[in-house]
Amino acid sequence: MKLQELLKRSFGFDSFRPLQREIMEDSLAGRDVFALLPTGGGKSLCYQLPALVRPGLTVVVSPLIALMKDQVDAMDVLGIPATCLNSSLDAGESERRWSRLERGEYRLLYVAPERLMLPGFLQDLRRRHVSLIAVDEAHCISEWGHDFRPEYRRLADVRDVLPDTPILALTATATERVRDDIIRQLRLRNPAVYVAGFNRPNLTYRVVAKHRAYEQVRDYAQARGAESGIVYCQSRKTAERLAERLSAEDIPARPYHAGLGADERNRHQELFLRDEIRVIAATVAFGMGINKPNVRFVIHYDLPKNIEGYYQETGRAGRDGLPAECLLLFGAGDTVKYAQFIEEKSDPNEQAVARRQLQEIVQYAESARCRRTELLGYFGERFQAGHCAACDNCISPRRTFDGTVPAQKFLSCVYRIRERSGFGVGLHHVVEVLTGASTEKVRRWRHEQLSTYGIGTEHTRPEWSAIGRELVRLGLLKQTTDHFSVLELTAEGWAVLKERTPVTLSRHMAPPPASATLVSSPAKRARGEPIRCDETLFERLKRLRKRLADERNVPAYIVFSDVSLRQMASDVPRDTPAFSRISGVGEKKLREFAEVFLAEITAYVEEQRTLRSVPSA
Image (cartoon, rainbow, N blue to C red; front, side, top):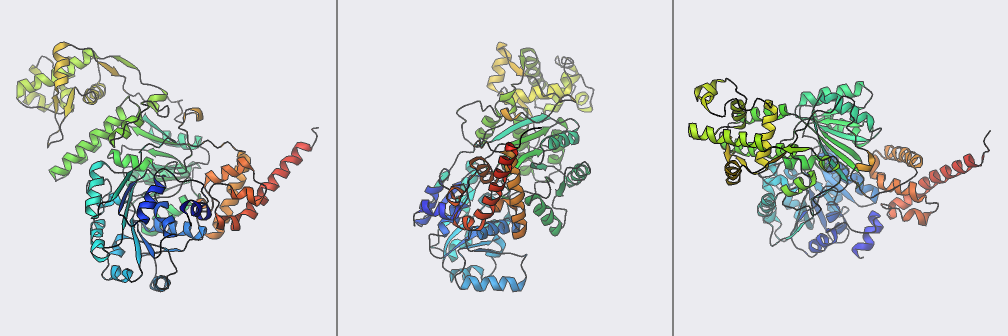
């Protein structure tokens, strides 16, 4: 059967997403493949659909038990034989699943890397005719990645035990350096490499000055009605307190962090996946591989550690392709706090990497340029439009001013400090000299005698810090990431200083007024595929979906996605052929759900007809 026919029959989709078909065809031809597709780009389908075509067993290496269960549940609803083996199963259940594997009853097996590399496990699998090893979240194998997991390193041994079995490596986020490392670590042989664009057009990116952060999050969540969201926090304590306060104000929320017991973490995650709670307040321990497609917002309560992590975390919003928002609350205090954490690290190399990552995420947060351009540029991709119309800087461009004088003062101060002392200093010390601070270091190095000492009292220290960071972004200064992070004039900065070239700077972010809402208007949000529908019918179908999902003990989105329900509420199918044309309706879902959904739609249409026919009093 052709891939296109199987796509509709089993998964209910009429067309492939970008690069999916090419990845599948190369993989089915027996070639090693590396694939980088954005979150929501359909990575899972790249091994699930071919598993129905090729003989033998497809083994999927997955890092999380919850993700394995989610995928297996989804396959079960589609009628695709799949199972998982992990530490959550008792001995009896594991034995039953092994027996079914031996009888060839499964097409897909999900395992954690630790289980795969247990003594004898690979040898046992070899007798099951393994036709593909799919490594999901493959960036976990690279020390250069944002989510390195040492247990992934041993996966290279698969090549020795199953030398003729092709490998498919999949990830949603990786710089070029990480991509090369994944290919090397997994020992991929002349792989086909597919890199889709990093752009998520349905996401709106916004950075807002942090000001009474809890109230900002509360007001935002209240304004979003019944929509689901994730709030990322730096500390466990913050996540706990935030969830507690939100729940007390009738916004159902739970915390998620590594300090909770495994059972409690899994219970909170399950409540979120099943729409029993609206908000998860979590540390970065939450989210990798979370398949919940209807997360409508992701808030970063604290500054992320790096851009890769930020991209991955924001990518958990809008996996269904419908519009979603990503909000970062940014305060100068976060920068200071992270800098202190970095100084506590004992490894100089770790310190240097952490400083560079901190500089990059602060530059992103403070930048007046298009957020999408900044994000894609980090991953080496050029955003051709240059103006996305779906980020705060494009929707409401930052005001600019003639910054020639403050730029001259700042650059001159950096130069005078180097001239006087013979060494460079960090941003904080330059600001102290400009504002005339009498600190121990200023006195020790006699910087109060510099001509630039105290010449910057017209700006506050936070304002000068923002100016200094913008001069770094403009390339007039560079900030080292050595043992001591210091500022140095670049050739461009030296030219500006000598020639008094005009410099335009942007106004730094001010806290929003007390009455301001953080929710952008629908007209200004990023656009996914627009599906205008009868919202009342959509809500009724959601309630029906929830009941059916609860009966099957699975999350609601496994029955149907919001995209499918919105299409039902738009097209209003009245018979089986019309229902079969809904996106996501394959053969098994047509048999299992068509009757009950069509009955609900028909009942609604009849109720509306009756209401319209009743004469008004």
